Image (cartoon, rainbow, N blue to C red; front, side, top):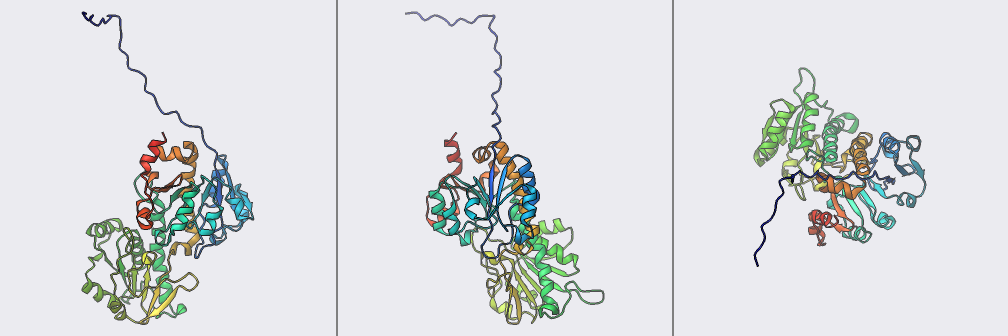
Length: 404
């Protein structure tokens, strides 16, 4: 049977089809809960009254446990004036769809969580428990962590802000413990004309190290920086705009400099776990009596062998006549500034979530948000947590794609 040739009419025109764009979803109304933090050393609050005012003005509801802002010197009246509803029972706060916290989820709070809740909080991998993860998985929780949240430029905005606060604070703290008021040796950090400047050693050239160096230089101290990354040392010099004394972490050079310093700051970052311990007990024993160690890395084990965790109430101890300040979560000691810094990031994130039509849509459209999600609808999507606790890991990108 002969096949007929295809017939094309000369009057036929080929036109491009119009592009099909995503229809913008309807804005979702958020119901946000802010519980009071009862955990150890936590004074911060994740949303300031100003941020709550903006969120409420955009048509969302905020419920808050009484005295939640007390640690940062915010009163219940500040929040009620901004439009938040103040409640006296923690259970009422956990009826909200979105929970915003400044401390990790605790065992007691797991019992209060409801199904399919969305939680924004830090996780503190070093102290996280398997039981908490499993309880959250059972309740199909979607959870986002401060530590891993990235902005559009690929940076971690909350971690960066906390590091800036910690870096600036450590030099002020060291200055306090050098003074007679705190049984120090009576030295003014920085010094004055005609007197050699105090010598500050900073181990680590990350954001904490950079801001510690800026503050120490501004006070007139002599600053020496150690780090094993030449790139970080170069970046610090470029950012500060001053030629600094820098060195890789070579034990003999480090020991020699520690012998004569007045202040030593441990600011090494922990890449995937524990901080490397670079200052031995022997090096500390050779330091000058009355000198001050501030170990910012204590959150991840510390980089001084003599470091032990202390609290905001009892922040220092002496070993080999050297004052050790080893308080984890230093920004919590400057809770008002830290709360405002966290709030600036979370306010815009919550408004973006509402504009996108909910957290599921936000994660679909904003790739950078995915790095912060460690649990999605009860599935663990953080590889480090799955390795640590031997819990099944699920790729977030596959999970989201499968729901579309």
